[in-house]
Image 1 (cartoon, rainbow, N blue to C red):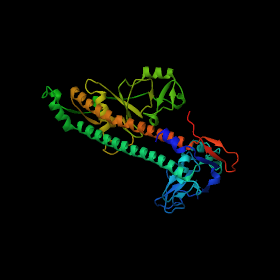
Image 2: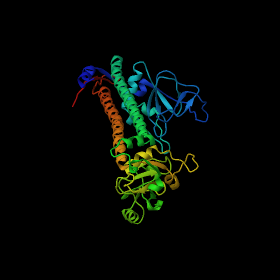
Image 3: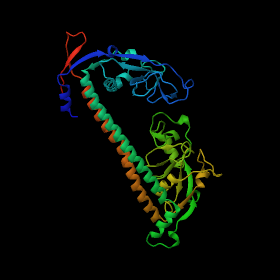
Length: 411
């Protein structure tokens, strides 16, 4: 579909403009709570973008458009072709002059306006009576169906692309994990060691040791809550914002003092989450930042024995265990220190890192491509939806039904 095709499709189309309340009925759902719902497979449509929970009976069947009635996503538009239980939401059901799928695409085009209908000082609500005031362009049904055909095809393309790229990313991630685990296994490290030049000496053998024998666990000085602010000079990463966007800061003066007096990571050190989802890692870039004591730690070690790049991949395959062998919810210093690891020669460490860097780059390429490609296709769909549904009109004042003759212009 090109702009020229759109111009031809919409050329000289008579469009009626009516309020949504004139051409559609709004029906509120029947409130049901998770506690009162009976386990089943019928989606309960309420205030979210996904079903709130599931019930064992429906109160709406057939093709139906729903709008979330309250909560953070009040106003979110959904399209259903299977039975649902309509709860804290309302349905928008068009009359015979309005194609239901056309109405759905048009409502998507109005999604931001619908969100802006939210009202209430507590939990925000959206009401059908307010949406009913929106004016909708109504071309002949045959044109509505052509528009639907175009937009549905573009939706299908976006969905197919998403599925293909997601499958490709999943495959790459599995491939990467397989080769990472293989390369870092004792048998394979010994095999690679034997294949390198100058093999056979004691220094070329893979050595088993513990992290405690390699280095010492370090952490930043404790930061008190009253020493932080919502904005400031230096980001302070807590366990909840580790590897994400910081929501707390400390002063440059405090940072300078603590960095000078207490432990602080060097560029390249691998920071490890010691609580929450334990074992997550972030490579320290050297930018001014501070980290929550005991929850975010690192191992200070001699890189002439084991490199940070090699440790970065080892941390990904470690199965963190407590001293008694059980699963742990917190990583204590002793758990880190007792973790066993295989250390080959620096030459072999470099070889392993080189291979895994390539695999990781391939995975990241697809991972970066996924949202980028989908966003481009989504923008394309949105652009054509706007073109097809934003009718330029000249008002016919003689018509009581607000009939307008469409004259499409492009500037």
